[in-house]
Length: 92
Image 1: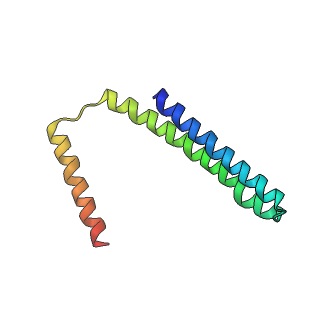
Image 2: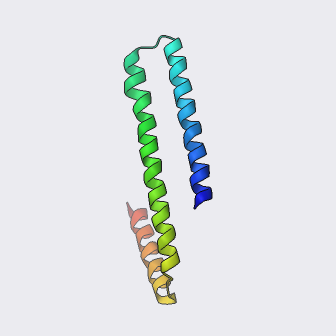
Image 3: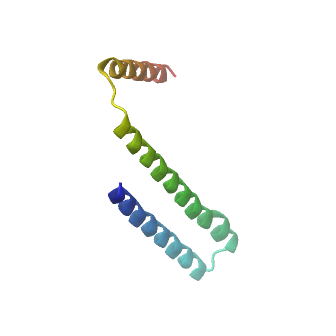
């Protein structure tokens, strides 16, 4: 779990650094401030929020997999449901 958090945090910081660098380039090119403020900066916040939710879900899934083990009939039922969903999606 900690390895995932560390690697995703590094990726997150890299992404934010690149976005801030891109914003600096836009400022130096004297691009309209409306583009910078309303397009790029909210994108960074949305990315951070999505990453945090992904980490929370990953942590919950990891806890659930440690607690529950599926039996053979449950696995077969899940596979059957999965196949039905795939067939339904193909029809659309």
